[in-house]
Image (cartoon, rainbow, N blue to C red; front, top):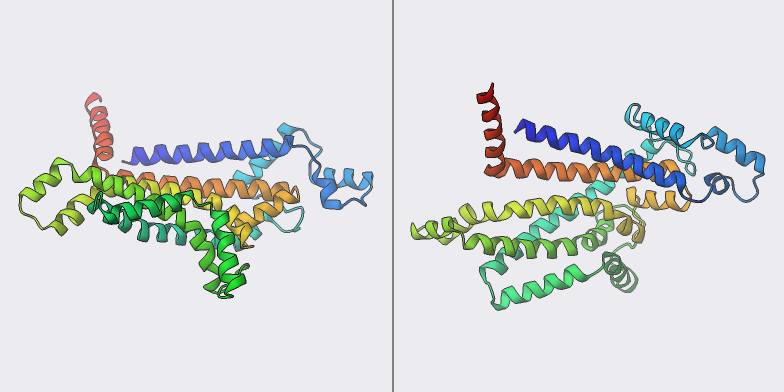
Length: 319
């Protein structure tokens, strides 16, 4: 089991390192001069050249890449924002909790609503409940999150005046962003849970459990769901990674001061440290989410345990 965890951690390091190199390379070769944007149209050529020299933009690609990787992974320094004039890590300290909270709330609602809906649809297969829930799920998957966010703002902010349309504050500021980010996940979880439960219902061990005379509730909650939810748990981890990466859209619509909005402001200002830092942080959180799901999956799936136990046993025999 420890070998499995070690392999996943090694892949995490490789993925994050590759993301850092790729985003740096893209920003290095993309057309445009951040010095001209930072200093404005009134800056002289001498001022622009001096600014580029101070920020190390006149060095070669290899020199800049080596300095960036060293600062990032050895000194944990993502640089200073060209536009905000503050360290990127300092700004992250304020914004990361908001983005993570938004992502965790979204995934929690996805699971608490989507999984029971999927179970209900599977237990009433081909009935009115099943068909109605699957139609609703299909609509939920098809709705673009930015369109739903704009619709919520029009209805609940402009028309009814019940909820604030932008910014951050009390609970009311979180309602519409969480709903906008949750609808597609709820629909996906409902559909996948239904498929997993239907597949598990036909398994031999479920037939055996019913033949023993166990109550239907015991069959469902003790035997069926623990096995059916294994692929659903894997899907939740992927969804969390997608939600974290997709906060750019939700945060921009609601002017929600998180990592996504920070990234958009960096892109518009050609703020290289902000862009590189945001992409790297989002990649790290997405990779950690997938890693956590892999570990949970390995813990609850006896086949993975047996695979690595057998491998370890063979090595001992060879020695």
